[in-house]
Image 1 (cartoon, rainbow, N blue to C red):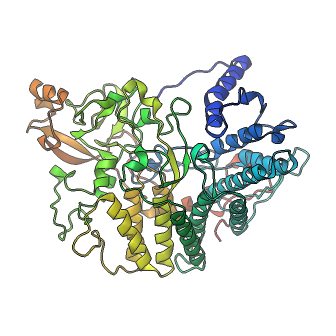
Image 2 (cartoon, rainbow, N blue to C red):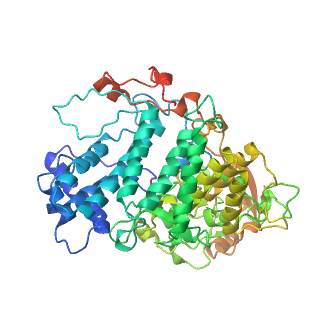
Length: 600
């Protein structure tokens, strides 16, 4: 079974039309179902063509207006960011020189198609016949989504053109880029207006819609970026924006606490239960309506999946980042737990077991009781083993797999039925944002309290000093690093790590990095070429435990470059050259051949 497959599509207009119709049935209708009462008999007939200006009457009817809005949600919030860790130090994959160019699509974000749809809704809804209270909710959600889209563009590229109305072909389309500050101001204005229009908290059948809780939490994220070194290269941590970020994130935390949000008691419940107090803004998945946002078929080992594998494979750097059970770093002489490579999984931060799967670990895929996952060549099934060239396959295996968001009870034929919600914003992120801004604003004790609460929920031991392994009286820089390190673990594979390092201007940690895995080299004292039939039989019966093996840290096997390349110019990515060519008034970023300054 190949890890990558390509399908040849006929160049036939009728075939393409059929594909589009099928897409609408498989994607759009399930999405609308999550937001629209099921009594509607044929939603698709109510909205004829969402990619162009909607026909008259669309915004006179609540159902068709919600269908239009749902399409914007779908194109804005996305889902689980599988393999985003390849860009950083979470998972396999080397980003090489030339990863990002002026002409390719990598790290480009130009969301004006979706922005045009939000502008259409914002223009038409107030003129329609929907009751005013329903209009307020539609407009408030659209304002948030427009802010979300602009935010993604500016943290990719810096300032972009601000378009507030749905442009027509008769309009002057040769717009210029607004400054980054103007864009941040525009985003905050949209969020403040959205907050004034929305209810405090959506629940029940409206869960997944943007509400005031979402707005407060997201505004904190936006202002954290605005204050960051990415946008303030001449004044990393003493600029005035940090006070704004602190105030916004404190307001967000206080608002969320008031309305019943908070950390769950168990870390694993964040990803294994639904409709809980930690998820503030979720992309909802529901079997059989909308599924596999986690791309479980790509993340599982191939022996218990189908078609392909290799997604979100943890690397050894991530495994080493987890502390011991007492919160001390591995190898710390003050830890009461001894760390050895031969038993690297023992006495670790409980999030290690909740997130990672290693050789011989219990991993009950397919609901198979006491099933163990093996990664040693000759012992592991199918293509699960550490390596590169296995049974004709060319794909690096790290000796580790990701457990987060996986529905272990699904059989290999059911992997695409995964319906774990994607937590676009969860309470833990708000706590990290609050802690980071508090530390930079001179409130280190507040930041320490956050880290203690995160570690307490994780199950780390408090210790006699009640610090959960954290250093007493950390200075500002030490606290900053502690927050970054803790978020690396707490939010692994949730799409934050690369962007966190980038906004702190810490891509130097990735530049030149080489990636490693953990390889089982012996079982019961025998190497791969000495493995006996008894060893294999024991593996088939899941009788071999992690301690029956010997391990080595081994560099990922590849026939290509082995070092990450992260140049200074990656702190702002270029606007794609085709957009520059189409609009000569657009200026390119200064590190990419132009003279636009993307910083504040």
